Image (cartoon, rainbow, N blue to C red; front, side, top):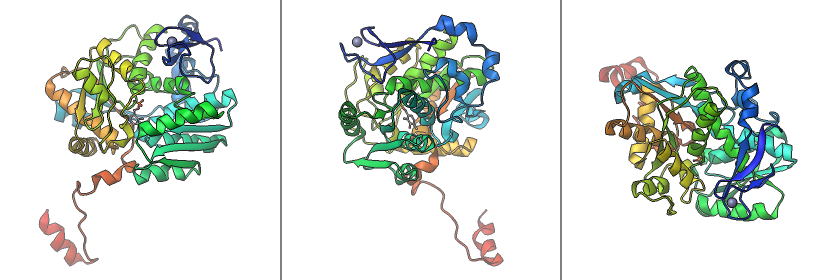
Length: 409
Ligand SMILES: *Cc1c(COP(=O)(O)O)cnc(C)c1O
Ligand SMILES: [Zn+2]
């Protein structure tokens, strides 16, 4: 493939060929895909992208696969101008990038998985797997079903039931591990070293992670080919934030935009905030924590890309904030009541943190601010028990309607 130059260690710079590997043999640093930007620059253009498919595959020139092999409709989700929420927060140009309606499994993970499994097929694997906090399992199971691959998904046993059904329906083997996500991930790393399986977020991770860049590409295109002034995204492993930044830089590198000065802000749940804590304490290393939050989709206590996510906020002059479980629920309700979008706990975290940052005064009122909503509220409905207005029960009679409803409005 002429567009990629291979893999490169983020720590020591050693180079490797394009293979299903993810760590450097010498220093154990993570491997990242390298591209030949000069070569890509010659063939890529705004016009070619605009004429491409209405999916993330319109950016295939900047993705590490030869062709779309599965997940043809992932990505290209709406960028909604959030007039009501913006008014509430004092922001004139607030946008919601709405991956709660991503295809096919309603979270941003459909981006990374469509790329990872296309690559796994290119490598010749017949079995795909993942260590997941829920959304990844849903997406891997769906894409494996589409591609006719064997599938094993590993999750912490205490996940929301909607997320478990959201995997089971595609009939993979769902392995519920008694432990935290970090226990699941460690177990999967051991399994991956023994079996010839494509673990999308372990041995296929360098390719998987590239899918997240499309969240930057699409926003820039949807804003009329300009980079936002600020973006805010939730962090679990820290990969998404790291790759949004890589995507923005690549758009400059291949000449799609002239420059960018986007500030990147990170959101974590207070009950699992190892990256935000490191930021607040001025550390450049992560102290692992034991997660305790309703935001299970982003509950990773030992984030693989945490230090790189810290570097991104430093380099871009961003910041980190956290949200308590109560604030996360309020964030979910605020987005629903102002913009009609039902997000899950990760999105509630993003909105709660957006509100805090706005109150702190980090945004000028006319700046373009984009909040990434990465998952769908129908998957975490149980967290809303006892937090919503109650249903009003009536008998099927006009008099009961008048007495119980009309008399009270
Ligand atoms: C996985 C996930 C994230 C964050 O992912 P990382 O790349 O691991 O930081 C954010 N939101 C949702 C809904 C997710 O499922
Ligand atoms: Zn190395």
